Length: 346
Image 1: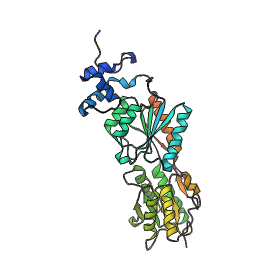
Image 2: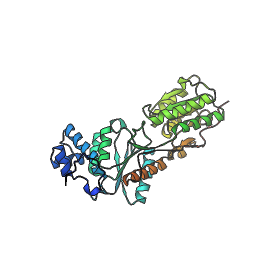
Image 3: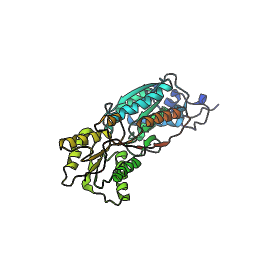
Image 4: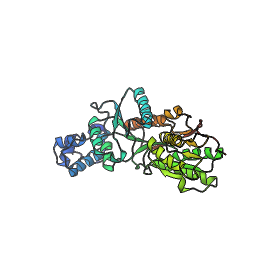
């Protein structure tokens, strides 16, 4: 009986799938080299690593049944564990892992722009069943490495437009920006400021685009003087809020990029002796817990962060079991009216 080549079609039954020894023979490397590649360990040249990765992927090696050496874990990756956004994501993932008798593991990787090889090497060694990821900027090589090992990845609230081979769960950010601005327009505001998050993030651009669309719908021209770019932090909200509220003709309302940034606008208003909402209305985004605790409680757009994380985890586990393909899911945002918005001062 002729020996099937490693690079051939993987249509044969799982019992006929190649061993690591067969992959090592076809790659002309040692078994230990294949093991290093498979487990993300150093000591392999880039060219050899890529050759072995290609063979692992083409062979269907990752499509074996459950690996008895793989732990029952789901890894969640966030940028900043101190943010309320991350805490809500963790709550969602933890609920689904607990329901399925699995364990959540956490990676905090810092700035998403520097996210990369250190984490990918670690996750290949930890071998989780699936990964729920805050970012969508994995490289093609990193995505291949995870796919080769049958570690499905689902992105929550993607930073940009994820590639076609990456599943994602997001929210209706544009519609949220529209709803926020329409609420203020309905109260009688016509001079509405906006502070965005980082412009390299898709959610930031979508929220501002919704703000601009609502203004256009109301026949109000977009005024660049009323638009500022910040981060999602409270200090940024305070800084950009002071710039807007310090204008000779200040806005009567401000739409912030998220709730934390909106609380920075609260700080700016207090520093300038302005009252919320009597002198300026403030609008947030996300509806994290501090929005309810603020004084006055913050009007905001609810982004269903916990539900998004739950859906992402369910999808990742279905993908791991071969019951779902790469897909995109978008959950609805909703308006939450509290006490930080009112009619403009007369």
